[in-house]
Length: 179
Image (cartoon, rainbow, N blue to C red):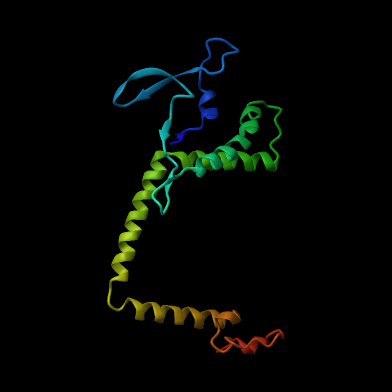
């Protein structure tokens, strides 16, 4: 299993204190609500095995997402280093890289993952409840028919009952779309 960094290692390194200027990694003070403060490193902290793993239909854990996220995050590393300087010019490309990076930080957050799981579970239960209702199929049919009629009034020939099956190859006139 891949040890996925919940917080990117490069990001954590910016908060680490190095004992020697040329040291590969520095130390971080790690605080938790349930324990005393302790020293750690960016390499060892914020790792959870299989964090971005997805179970496949065969029951295997697919961890390719971690690699894809790492590539996207690495793309923003230059911006993170240069952004601290007053002479840095914020081009649209650099703004986009930083925005993508910020979004990826959010995507890695445990709170986001937990909230997404909670929403998915609620939505799934509600959908199953609605699907079990005896009049569900007739209500869906009525809704779709209403959508098709409304779309036809607004010039969407593929949604208009009169236009279905009428592919003449010529542009349609406006009056052909009206009910």
